[in-house]
Image (tube, rainbow, N blue to C red; front, side, top):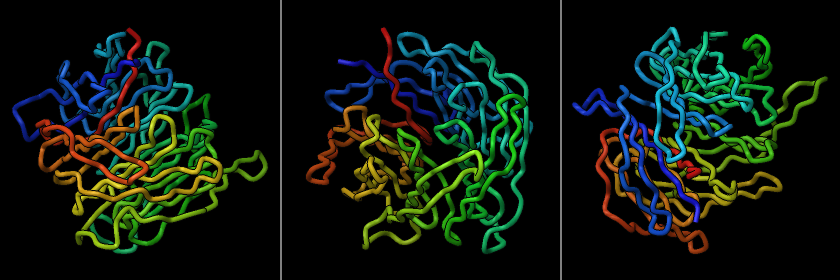
Length: 352
């Protein structure tokens, strides 16, 4: 049986514990985690693994930090990088692992950094500030870049902006690391696009909206003559008809086999799971059920699709469930694990 570890990032500012990343051994059979190691880092708001599976990158107060992933899943720090701005909220790499992108919720800024062959972080190659307002000129309607994700053909960077209700699409110059605007995906007013996922074949793009509590499905197509095209196919709610007021969608994750998509809702404190029709990209809701925690900032399926974990940011817990996709049910299967203000989780198959 394959062996996995899980990397969990968390804030440290409200705690004396300065270990912002925790590494867990994954009990795949029983759907549980056992703490293996801790990494000292401040306010790890998001982590991401390179596409070559060799390196892990994390947001931290001063910018970004790079780690080499050892054979047993432990992390070895290899360098840091300054993003010349406020602490970011999201980061990812291009599919060749030549560039690292960060998205700034607080300052509405995208930063592009060069990555070296050894996974270390090089110089900034571009900085782009989003401008404009959303539908109401309040705090949430200023630019807030909440996600930066490349199209799977590695041509375009999609930047979801929760404040302006747009996802701006930039063409990446792979020689210079510069971005140039190529398109804008307009979401509904007051919807707040938050996170983006891309199908395995790259044909479909999924955008979850925090305030709109919905996932929009797009067909992506690109030609040298016309540039990128995003055709909206579906919009599906992340909530039941009965739900808590003031809810907001948060997480968005695809299963390892790309057969399922899962999201979470703060306020309603629920997880919503969908089956994915890989031929046409459409989603079918399987369930929307409570997670026994407050503000599930991230929720993810274990690699076997038979278990689920919810990272409950405000109740400082991780809760665990058995998943029955056919019946559309989840059942809590273990006691919760205490962790201060968890932000995100990534499962990683180790090569021992």
